Length: 141
Image 1 (cartoon, rainbow, N blue to C red):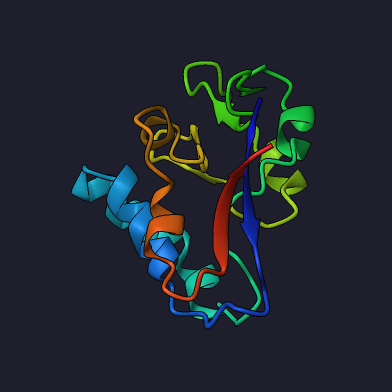
Image 2: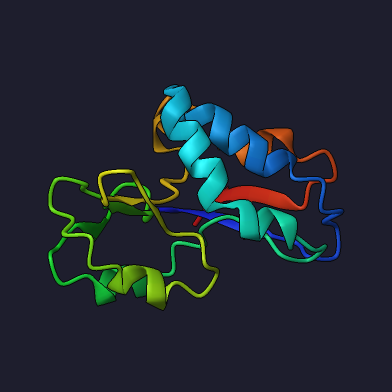
């Protein structure tokens, strides 16, 4: 069993509600949130309709990771990060086809976890919950 986030580019209106919901769900520390906003500035300023800013959990970053910091969760199928193992080499970032991997102030990887805690509580990911045009969906595979 696993899960998949799907993005329908034809429905996307580029409102960034998904991005805002993600930031709200994952960044309680305001300093880290501001750092995250700064690192995403280029993506947000160039956001266009038909470009989903979320991770597709394809595993390319995991394949590039030499330290074993990235792994696929057996229950959900999402690619998750163990920041304690991250060396900050950024090889994963160069392999990401959607350009969404970023790093903390300490140089450790931060990436979409598919809202795994919300899923384990029986709720949908934050980005899916707020997408008013249903461009992002969540399903079991």
